[in-house]
Amino acid sequence: MQRRSVLLASLSLAGCGFELRHEPELHFKTLALVGFPPDSPLALGLKRQIKRTQVQLIEDPARAQVVLEATREVRDRTVVASTSVGQVREWTLRLQFDYQIRLPDGELLVPKVELRLYRDMNYTESTALSKEQEAANLYGAMHSDAVAQVMRRLAAVRLPG
Image (cartoon, rainbow, N blue to C red):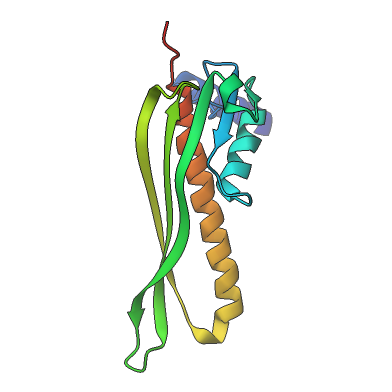
């Protein structure tokens, strides 16, 4: 009986057009990442995702078919709410990432993109250690979101000619 209900559920999902998300298909063979800070979590995430495709990462941007150029990558936090004695009650975590996608000769395939991600986080000093871990997790989620958005943008790139 249980096997029958699993089969029916599978068939109903297949019939409605449900499909698991898959890696974006990139329409070029080589890619160079330039302009990223040495310890960039975004660069690490992009490299990890690109390795799951058929695209080869190349160090020399002059030899790559496509160049992803980071022009800005900033993580910061600002106080949103505080008590009358100045204790922080809420933070806004921000990830700012600007990039462009171009050919090695400088011709732009995708003009400058300004990616801005925000997460709000409540805060109490009595739980400061766990709140730092929460902030790290929120930044990790923002990096994952940014990598997914960049990968979708790369999948939309078509080489001229």
